[in-house]
Each structure stands twice: as structure tokens, then as C-alpha cells.
Length: 251
Image (cartoon, rainbow, N blue to C red; front, side, top):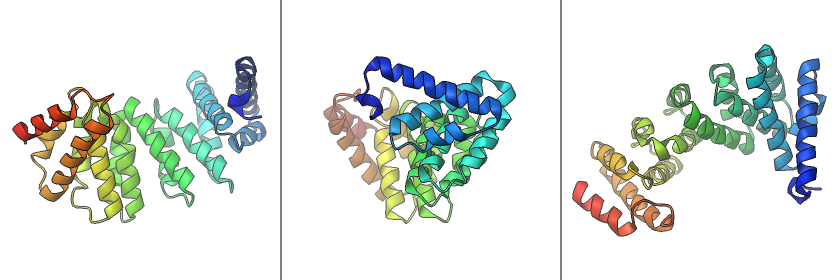
């Protein structure tokens, strides 16, 4: 039965069972239970498993190296769900301790399966929000990678940090302004729109865009920013009319 089809009390029991089984595996230096939960068809079972790994890593310093080695092993699995969940588990660790799992994120970027690569994007988002300095330094390494999908994934991955701290990611986004690949360009415009509608963010983004050389792309970004203020009108600090007025007076 799917995780969220269970009554709340049974879900709680299942989470406890998964946490216990994973902790037991780590203590014994095994991964039978972990492999079972990491490969489960239910997204929420896998999520419970990778959250458990993150909690155990933080709580038990003596097992940290062993946990990273375990994730190394799981990332070599033939099952994409196992590899995807290993990356998500590494992301939980990276929110607090990025260096030990950096190589896992790099490997995940080049995985053959899109779900694993998407897990890297999601992990960069959550790590960048909580532990920005090393994560953004990692992202910067791949901004001009020859593979357009790597550039796109990195651009997408740093978005979440920018929603509260656009000044942290705007220098990285600016490096992509002359990228000739449509998918990268579209993602860049999308991210600029997504980081411009929260409190104080429109002002920061517009001020930075004044210094961009690619005026054609800036025009696309301004149109996206205006459109975002309509699409997200229930969440945006300014109305679309106020955003248009601000842009007209300040750009």
C-alpha cells in the first residue's frame, strides 16, 4: 500500500521501522535494508530512507566516513532509483557538510539517467539554501562546461538560494548571459524571473541587470519578471503594475 494511503499512525510506525532498519545496517556495516528502501517504488519510502541517512550522519560522527563510503557504493548500482536516492541522501549531508559528498554530486551530474541528474539539481537547491559558500563554489566550476545539460542543471540548481539572496547567485548567472544554447538561455531567464518577486529581490535583480552586456537577454528577463508578478500574484511582494512601474523608473 502506498505510503500516504496508510493511516497516520501506521505511517509513523513505518517511518520508525525504516529508521531502525537503516541505523541497524549502518551499525553492522551492511546495506541490505538500505538497498531495499532506496529501490522502493514509492517516492515517500525512498524519501524517508534518505532523510534517515542524513539524520544518522549528523547524530553519529563515528559513522560519517562509513556512510559516505556506503553512498559511494550505492551510486554504482544499476538501479536508477538507488542512485537517485543516494544523491538525495548526499544532499541531506551536504546541507551541513559539503566537502565529503562533493564527489558524489559531481558523479551524479554526469549520470546517464535524468532522475539522478534531477536529484543533483534538487540537492543543490536545498544545500545552496542552507550551506551556500561551498555549494556555489561547486556550481561555479561547471558554469562553462562543454555539456549544455550540465550548464542548465547548475543554473537551475542555484535558483532557490537566489529567492532570498539574489546577490549570491547573480554573479554566477551573469556568466551565462551569452550562452548560445536555447535550453540554457531559457533556464537562465526562468531563474531570473523566479528570484525577482520576493521582498527586496526585484530591486537587487534590476540593479544587477543594468550591468549585463547582453541587452537582448535582459529584455527577455524583464518580460519574464513582469509575467512572474502576474503568475505568482498571490506570493509576489509587488503587483504586476508596481513591478512594471519600478522597472520603467529604474532600468
